[in-house]
Image (tube, rainbow over all chains, first blue to last red):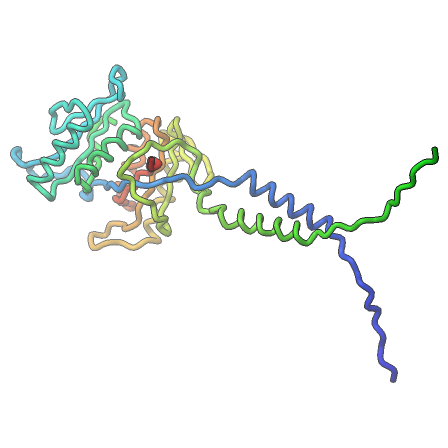
Amino acid sequence: MGSKQYNLDATEADMTPMIDVVFQLIIFFLTTIKFKALEGKLETQLPKDLGVNSTQTDANLLKAEIGLFADKSLPDGFFITLNASKIPNLTTLRAKLSELKRVSPDMKATLYPYRGITYAHVVKVVDECIKAGMLDITFAGVAFDA
Amino acid sequence: MGNKKYEMEATKMDMTPMIDVVFQLIIFFMVVTDMTQQELADIKLPLATQAVKDEQETGRLTVNLMKNGSIQIKRKEYSTLDDPATQQVIRALLADAVLKGKKDAQGLSERALLIRADQTTEFKHVQKLLRICGEMGIRIYKIHLAAGQPEES
């Protein structure tokens, strides 16, 4: 039996369709790509107790209850109260929180954002709480006027 | 004057280097395109200097709150939480996340919820979401507030 002879001529593949597809892919990625923006998180928590807490609160107990009230006439658009006393600015809030934290290291900050307060206002206050070393930040329960 | 004659020999371009470069480009784009960002709606976050790097936790639900309070989850849009239908969807999603996640000694979910709201979104919309998180059968208490990190100067 004679050996088979194969035609080993150089065959050329047509690259045009592949290049077309590849360019389509590049255009797709170029138009859809969104580079990751610097994004972080602020950790907060909700009260763990459910419903109204019937425990008597001690009036003398140190606490950090931060009220946020909208006021469009102010440059920041809101003002803050700490334990029902008005605070002139965020720097003062931080100083007062640092002082409270120094006296009572386990202290939690509880935020009471009232009507008209935006997400940016809350983030600003949470940011100041963390700067003051108050890492336990919680939001008030359902009883306040949001 | 006689007409000049040009030799029109067929020239062949070597496509190999171009294809190499093009494949490199495709690989680059495929690598840098983070598909997990599908969860992140295009909103303007407020900046916070204390925001920590967000390690994307598996199973964590991300809720995007748009300027008008409407909700976007995994690119799907819902109306505000004033709409009972939206509330129902959110409850189901949160309950599902809780069901799949671990619970601590107190029986509370260890799953966190990432809230991404536009800086101008009224907090009342977030508050409505927080209320649902506190409901019986859900009880998610770990809340992460998304914030932009200021660029270092």
